[in-house]
Length: 100
Image (cartoon, rainbow, N blue to C red; front, side, top):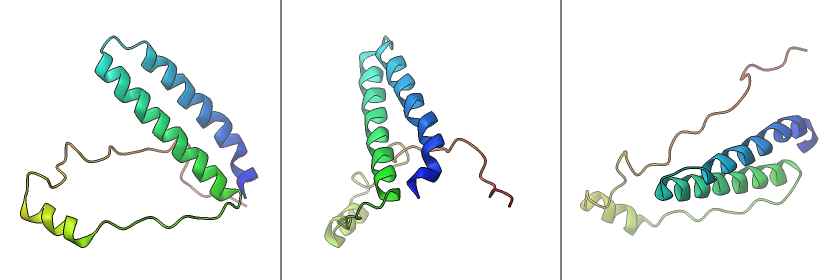
């Protein structure tokens, strides 16, 4: 199944490399560090996605503890605010299924 997406990964990974290169040119060191980390994390995610599509075994994700979730509800300062949420991710290309 992974072979079906080889062309897409062929565009995606160099694109992420290009973004990482642009991050190195940012004047603001905090922005540069953040963008470098974001791209590195994104590349790791996509590499794992490619492995899974290629037949790699999945790993169970640890669920957050209910005590921690309750603690966040009781203390609004520790609850996730809109500013601390992970940013939206967008795909490149058509979302329409291919016609056969």
